[in-house]
Image (cartoon, rainbow, N blue to C red):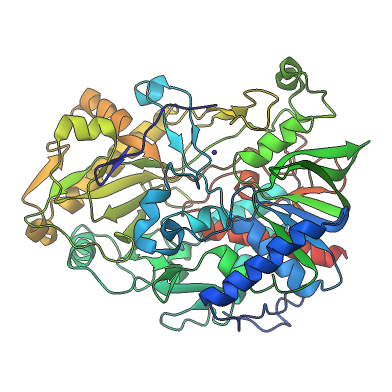
Length: 567
């Protein structure tokens, strides 16, 4: 993929505010610590010192500090002051300029903060290899992503509640949690938005001329235009709006800053960056420890109460398989003894497909505002759908795959309108490459293998062209660069496959459900294993129609809520 002229494709190697009576367990994280560099450095130094005096056992061990892991750790440490909590992160501290500066987020794709996982070549993608970027740093993806705070649709969460058999996964309870966790700096909305929570969220800081024009284009094309990307949109068929961003005082406010930095001064929590979890140790049917590579030595940390995997949409499944929890026929060739035969570990992989190919030439360069991505829209291709299957994202630079760049040679003044498939029917799978924890897994993503996904993306591309070629966009469009014309069926299929890429929203490989084959139940317990939970995007039975960061934070909040109620 090429982003603003930067090549990122590589060959795979061997990465409402609510009262406490409404959600009684939750308490309030102390949000009084200013985000000043010297104080953050003091916290990091304190945690680094603890690395020299590690305990052999902890009450809770949380593996991963991404969106869900940070929420689990922060909430537990705040309300369980007597519990000893160990948090493990394979990546380093979140101090890189590309983490802090919202404008530099594209630099995180393929750099040292990325797990650098690639899919297998796929005929459905014209034989192309697709990068699946995941954050390997304190804060996980919330430290490396495009900073968009987009909450799930009501229909998505009510579906989770039905599939899991657990009503508290449903929208109304989730809405309570979102109001409680948000510190919303936009127009007040008592039903949908909260203030005073740990997660700083604000509307896009300023409105760009090209973004405002796109909203006018949406009206021209019959789409609703909303004052807030979240809120009422969640109970609608969709709509266009300026994005919400996790940007505070011009800097990224990741989930690590939202949840972890407020509790790391406490004695009950230890965070170990650069600590790669290799596997979970089982004693019979109970998870009792984790085996961790600290860089200079291997260590086993014992868990007296619970181990929670928050390693992400791919790595939690990988850790399970390395631990002997997975499909026996897939583990045996790697010499891994199957302790729990769970064939669906690694199955049900799916993702949002981002089509990076619809481009227009602007008469002059477009100054980048905020992250360069400020306006988005959601819509349904069919009225019968429970939630939108399209997500349109405007990018103020020529975002396109290598193949599209080579074919259309867009000028540097080009801008993009990307069609996103956010309710895919295609499913892939994940398997171990070897028994070596350092090796990334084999990912057969199988994007666009379901014919309905191809049809939906074709319709979304035509919707993009209608928007981009509208009267409202003419001041910013000398010409349509790509595809440049209406395509016939064969041309459209080729254009889709050459322009298809990933939103980097990998989910589903440890799916939640009440059925026998589900990997985790509605309480996020790994079936067949006591003392082991999973809380991250891998548990999504079906992906939400929004970006996954807010949904993963919700999963972390629910995990902490569940653990608190069980104590």
